[in-house]
Amino acid sequence: MRFVKAAVVGLCVLGGAAVQAQEVVMGLDQAIQVALVNNSSIIQSDANASSAAAGLTAAYGGYLPSVSASGGWNRYQTDRAAASTASVGGGTFLLPPSRTTTTSFDAGLSAGLVLFDGLSKQALVGQAGSRSDAAVHATVRTRQSIVFQVQSNYLDVLRNGQLVKVADETLKRDQRQLERITESNKVGSAAMADVYRQQSAVATDELALITSQNSFDKARTNLVALVGLDPEKEYTFADSSIALEIEQADLDSTTAHLGDFAGLSKRALLSRPDYLGAKESFDAASSGVTMARSGYFPSLSASVGYGLSSDQLSSLRDNKTINWGLNVRWTIFDGFQTNLSLQSAIAGRRIAEISLVQAERDINAQLKNALLDLEAARKQYEVSQKGVVSASEDSKIAEERYNLGAGTLLDLYTANTTLVSAQANLVNSVYNYVTAKRNVEYMLGERSY
Picture (cartoon, rainbow, N blue to C red):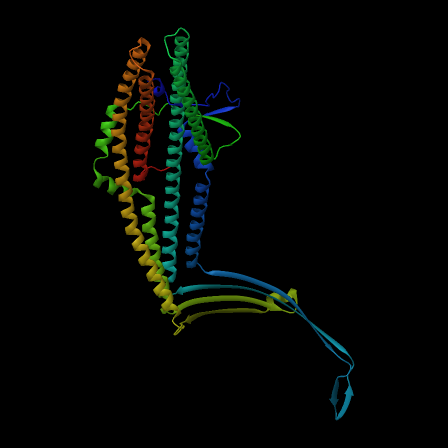
């Protein structure tokens, strides 16, 4: 089976004309590394994680005092009109116009620290930490998701490339058969109807090749976009590590390794970043309840200040003011706003708890389906192998019978069609198995990138 001897897919030649362009050969691991740098979803998730980490830093800042400095210069001018009067010794005198100007300078430094706020600061730190961890887990899962998408798309490119080869070999075989039938018709040993039938078969093969080539080109375009490559360049996707003939030992070991669903489920719940993120979201919601409840408690804060003031800059340090103190604030009634916040936080915690339970169910269902797909892919591969062997022998026999005049062209066409279908099934079953195996790894979520 020449079409499964190597996993090398390049630019295909269609109609005898090759695309002339600078080609870049890229293996699967290289494509993954480029995607981890260029993919927009990964960039966005990294930004979200950085933002969440900044939120955690700000939450810790609540334990530190707030410090502020101030300084100012003010000039005051008072103008008095000439109509103003003043009484002196029983007489009234008209005061002349006047202008009074004063200047002041001041500077100060103050600090304040919240000593107790109903455990709101502690809850805020816990909530920010949980959100930061959840964002990190989301980033890890996003990277795993993109890697799996790259693997699936890469394998899809290889799959469609091999199907192009199958279609091309089928076309060439039927073209050679058409030449033989045409020559036989010229010497009178084949009917003209056979020539027409074979011409129709060749036309069908050409359409199949065009369709396969188009599917291959579209798959390659999708991979280029997903990885974030330059669409102006031409790429050859080739990876010799992806074998197209799966060894029986590999099939048996995979089945034995993945047979323990309970153990795999436990591994997934311990490793899946999305499940760990759901747990962190629940913890954040729990901290939100504590923050909301803190509104029922008084708050205690301390403050200290140091100030300078004068009407001359040179004597600014002559007048000093120092103050310090403690302040207690307790909202006795706020129109049930604290109660509203608390009930909303409790509802949010309940929703997060339900989401956590549902996440566990989803993971188990996804893992179970992945295992079922892997088992089905294994069986499909084994059946497809047998189908190619029998279809190849049937095609050879049908061709020999037709050349000897003991069989009809319809028998040969049917045998060739069956062979093409068997070859395509084998190609699909190989890549289905490889994709299913990688999907199980993705569902376990144990690998980090």
